[in-house]
Length: 84
Image (cartoon, rainbow, N blue to C red; front, top):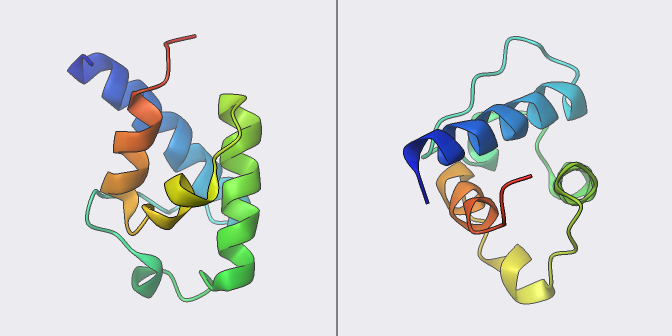
């Protein structure tokens, strides 16, 4: 995928994080994990997944969700989707 596509995905993902955590100051980075956002617990992980699935119009399977260890992994999964 192109760098431009990855950046577009990153922007959408950053917007999702800002919305889910109700914090417009969040700026995601590839190595960011749940340890970097105090409110990011297991319940918020589910909320994030639901928001991501809604925004990208996808349904992630358990294997894909298990691979989402950090933002970089999320971007890698999401950038494989066809551009809309």
